[in-house]
Length: 325
Image (cartoon, rainbow, N blue to C red; front, side, top):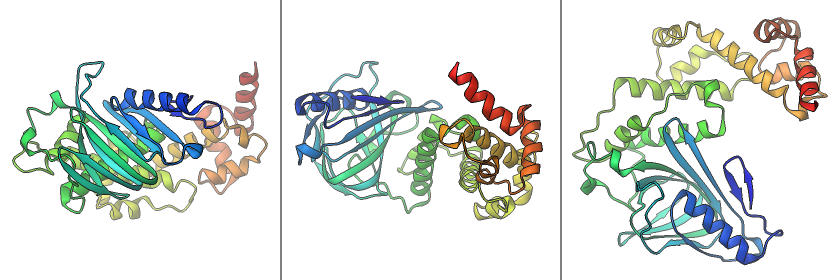
């Protein structure tokens, strides 16, 4: 069983089948509770469980080609707090059974799982899903548990269902990237409010601030994904996310930056990260500059020197020199 960050992967060749299954079930227990696993093809069994935390929200990502994962009984969590899981199917198809209900989850579908109840997931080939853990004790003042439909699809085509999916995808993006770099706004209460608004009779209120945070999270992610494009137009992308020019500048003014200054800082920080990767050590600085969205080496050198206090060449050389000491 190999740990990569918080990810446990099962190595087919290193361990016996019995040990692989024990390790796999142990990793499931850490994230979701006591489960048993049935395999369709023991030779090619693969599985990975990643447990992460974004702000105050816990997430678990599971990918496997196991035939089924079954929870037979209720098990008390180590911390004493049971959870609802907001589940996003990210790849493949799974049949999910709980509370006498059965649904088919395809990529992009969402549902709710109750940690207190037995359940069963039957997979069609390799699958991947993301679970957002919501402590049950935190929702009682906002959501009537009688309104929570486990093993029913959340309507992601409705306004709030769509926003909930967007928010979950933003959490997934944050767990793969340095959230300090993008400063995405995520918090458990906003998540609960969004989820509650997909149900009738909830007292949840999705605030204007939460809606604005979702918009700007999407804008930041879109800009991050286009860092290598030196001609990216922030105002155009903001408009695509229904953010007016005045709102765009007011938002970044709170950070004492213009939108373009923020993007430049993001690019320089990204360039500094590339220079710390071994694969980039022998590559020309201009390639790193281009990868971060600078098409002029002199401009990049001046900007990076001002940003870090060192020239790009010196920054990279010193980093690997100190690392080898």
